[in-house]
Amino acid sequence: MSRRALIVSTLLLLAGPATMWAQRFEVAPYVGYRLGGTFTNVSDPTNPAVTGLKADNSLAFGIVADVRITGTVYIEAFFDRQPTTLKADIPNNPIDLFDVKIDWYHIGLRFETPRQDEPKPQGFLSVTFGATNFIPESGYSGETKASFGASLGGEYFFHKNVGAMLLGRYVATFFNSGDQYFCLDEGPCFILPSSTTFHQFEISGGVSVAF
Image (cartoon, rainbow, N blue to C red):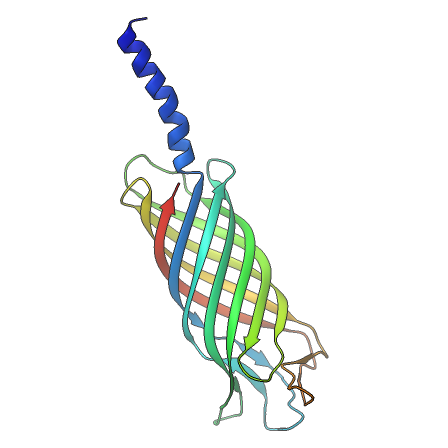
């Protein structure tokens, strides 16, 4: 084998792992708009007119990280925060109660279409599990509950390592029946007489960086 052929062969062998490594890890900060969600059939011992609690729609922001385990399957983890306001859902007259941050902490799997050498849109589907954390900014107690998430989206890498991401995400948070929530310090609590699911949807866009 000539020296030139040996050099070319060596470079190709080194380029293969380098290309694979460039696609093994992705991180994407993003911003989005989240539909707030509603607790139904809530009992407020201080106000019998209250029929539920709901969170305002508002902007959200987060970051998602993916580690490739096969050609099209990734382990995915994300954090997402929505600063919003929780309201007492009184018919025709909702009342602001307190500001709250609603955080998602999730991990799961992401399935994507095969990557191409040339720039090309890629689709993906993610299924995740984790927790939703409610952090009130006043004297109310916080809550942390189990949740399930599903995402559908796409990416376009205009450079080998940099691209744009757009996704829609749904997260369901589960609350038990008969429990007390958002209690005031040494005061009353909201009560859920039956199990309920807190549904939220989000549309987000961000920048994907691959390593």
